Image 1: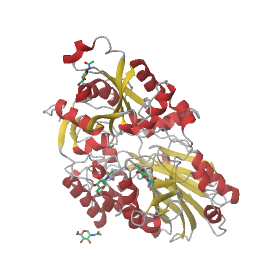
Image 2 (image 1 turned 180 degrees about the horizontal axis):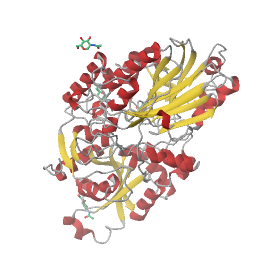
Image 3 (image 1 turned 90 degrees about the vertical axis):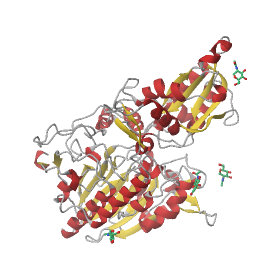
Image 4 (image 1 turned 60 degrees about the vertical axis):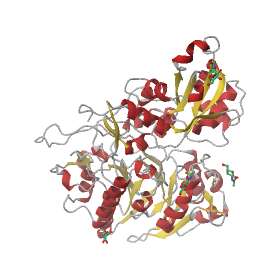
Length: 615
Ligand SMILES: *[C@@H]1O[C@H](CO)[C@@H](O)[C@H](O)[C@H]1NC(C)=O
Ligand SMILES: *[C@@H]1O[C@H](CO)[C@@H](O)[C@H](O)[C@H]1NC(C)=O
Ligand SMILES: *[C@@H]1O[C@H](CO)[C@@H](O)[C@H](O)[C@H]1NC(C)=O
Ligand SMILES: *[C@@H]1O[C@H](CO)[C@@H](O)[C@H](O)[C@H]1NC(C)=O
């Protein structure tokens, strides 16, 4: 593998980068080359609105405009050598970044930026379907933008104009590649998701593959490759069902899967002619996959996880800062810049005195974002005025926090990056404290409750997706949990001095997958991954002025306060804990009109003033 390793050193000239102004310049690093096949793919997934790239992390600082330039050059390069390149995206394009969440209506700028990329095959994620507005925007904007590239094998939507239930997009498509004439039948799936709003219908993958149209599509005899894209983990019962259904009919035809949802880099080999690639999250990763040759009896598969920065893009295209950016790419970067400006995403609300981590620090600890919420934010600001003389136990799911907080300016953008959801709080009164604590404890035993409750399995809905991958990995062996050490966190480290331009090994992804240890394009040092629970809890004391009146009854019962998103799980855990409540009837709104995002922001504005030391 060493032979694939080459080293490039570029002069750093930040004013030339096309990435967003103010973003961290990429750092020279050792790069593993791509190995092209006759058929090649580039893959993004779970971008969650991060089309501006990571402004604070050099490893992931390229934006969607740079990706537009990259795809143009990669296509040209491929086609000049008589190869094909297909571009794939597997959903969760929305929710999780100010560029999407900060506008009203949400996504006002995102959809036009997204459509600048020429995507060949794409699918919906679960985040496109939580709210009526979001799925309707998908139906009315994204699907028309990408036309027959958008495939919805198992999703229907109520057409807001006609009121009829219709497919969100075509169920499948058949096409022939431009250079090699490879005949492809492609599907687009979403995992067995049940949390969608009732204007959409998600059919179980296992049921979909039994439908007549699917069975007919896979009986096509004039096919060189089945392409299955989806917002589905590459190691999942859903993809297993698709794989088995196709292999039942065709043992010899290659099947290539692209997946996502768990926010990890992963590559699974199913058989000699079949594999699945998952390409991370948040525009940190552009996945590359090649097959050489699809029509051979022993096709050669290679994969690379490209760090989303210009240093990597220049390397893989053989271009530099003077030749890389295309007009279209530059225009797209400009659209992002204008949108960021219109949304005032760089507005500074306060300054974080230090880094706070989702999974990079142990929980509980002083560096855990969850410990910070439990010990500082909730006790300091979670209190309904009308319940101020009553103790409360607050339960919040860890998945409500999506990203780390870096030391320094906490901006309008950071607000949505850390907590994009619009969930507010509800409460049940007069719950014995011991019962409330038991409910939190039960929620952290996720698997037992889940298997008895839901008709179909949902991927760990309470915890961050990365944590979910970790939990799943724990049940199947060491290789999987090792893979989870490959998380991101390129952040923070810059060249030590101006003269020192030798490649640095920065902390970052060190992925282990079914093809080995050499998948990441950039050589990184590993970062440890710490497990977090499904829910965290904070005991909120009554305001002191009323404390004396409350000496006898006070400590034994509490208001059980929770984020409204988790009400179905609270309901279930309450049943197990012997608390007889009918939700939402027996609950009420807590801190009416305040979302968790606003609560956190309010605390930051009051407690994290900026001064020279925090900038
Ligand atoms: C849906 O979008 C409209 C504006 O387009 C907005 O007024 C409304 O509040 C949104 N609804 C929800 C539930 O977000
Ligand atoms: C969807 O749920 C809403 C309540 O949120 C209800 O008013 C509506 O009737 C439901 N629609 C369908 C088609 O079930
Ligand atoms: C870029 O934007 C300019 C000005 O808006 C426009 O004239 C030009 O056609 C655009 N070019 C591309 C390739 O999108
Ligand atoms: C708490 O305050 C409410 C009104 O805000 C009052 O009705 C109630 O009696 C108080 N309870 C105690 C235990 O002081």
